[in-house]
Amino acid sequence: MNSNTYCVIMAGGVGSRFWPLSTSKTPKQFLDILGTGKTLIQQTYDRFKPICPPENILVVTSGNYHDLVLEQLPELTSDQVLSEPVRRNTAPCIAFANAVIKSKNPNAIIVVTPADHLILNEDLFRTNIVNGLEFIADNDTLLTLGIKPSRPETGYGYIQIEEEENLPKDFCKVKTFTEKPNLEMAKIFYESGEFCWNSGIFMWTLKSIENAFNKHLNEVSSLFDVFLSSVGTTDQAKHLYDTYINCKNISIDYGIMEKADNVYVQMVDFGWSDLGTWTSLHDNSERNKENNVVLSGKALLYNTKDSVVHLPEGKMAVIQGLDNYIVVQSDKSLLICPKENEQQIRQFTTDLKTEFGADE
Image 1 (cartoon, rainbow, N blue to C red):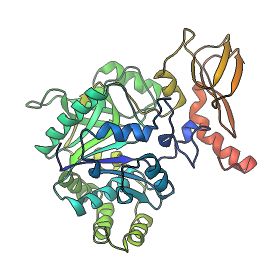
Image 2: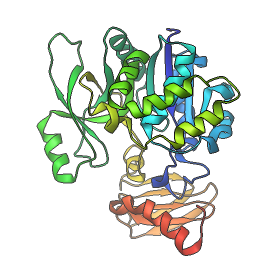
Image 3: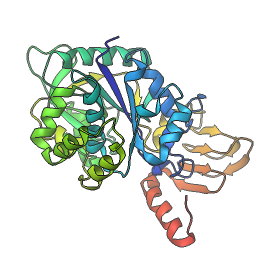
Image 4: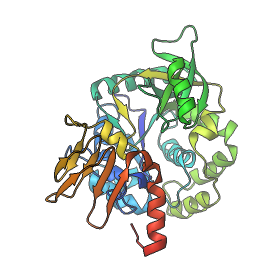
């Protein structure tokens, strides 16, 4: 285990697409959505413990979730939970972590990961991460993990790859990034064999990512350069707030990865899903002969197929005549929605607040 290796877990999302189970008070990364006995962030933390010294694992999250992170990851100290005062997307999140890491170790090698992904083969995952860390340690590169598509998925970003000589096996140069495509384009990407899914898991040295920020997002890096002088002082929270208030809202993909010319992809196949929707959870869960999934609670399903059901523990339901539906009940709310319309769930929650003043 290399003492220069750091892991940054991004855990600031609100998980609105998993409403009503996921709420603004307890987003999906803090839930045991898979029924394993551990929440998604706990699984992510455990995944990296064999790779990275525990003291080098940082969680970047909303200030509202600082105590919740410490409750679920009691091995962390308060200083390892980096609380963002406002949401500003992934580029400022990573710049914040970079500043804190630089104050500790300017020679750091960093892996950045979301807190809420599903990894089926964790041994292979760790092997891939170690190989990736070795690659970036010897090269001035920004590395992302690419997943071979299994279908024309419209919910993921895509990476077009090109072969380059003298690269290790499974490593390729990135040609283009594409945000979530429509179905027609997703089919073209899938059938071409030139594209992979963008996992959102990145690796780089601190020096490489700092150079990229300085070149492509200087307006962000300059703010965090000023903030760096306050790290570890009593003024850190005030300077952090001022930094975030003045910082643009921009993703690392759009701000840097799509613009840099030293971006590479490591092709991996360890069983991955970003668990972004109820449908993705359905597709990655054990299904019965009618292709239904009952994740929690007790349900009798009649003339029902291709559906996902999640009930509170101890609750029972009888469901008849549904095809390709989501049925989710929480303590306060009930969602019944065709799977094909699940992208509207965010709008549903907004409408609830407008119509009923609901806070969840």
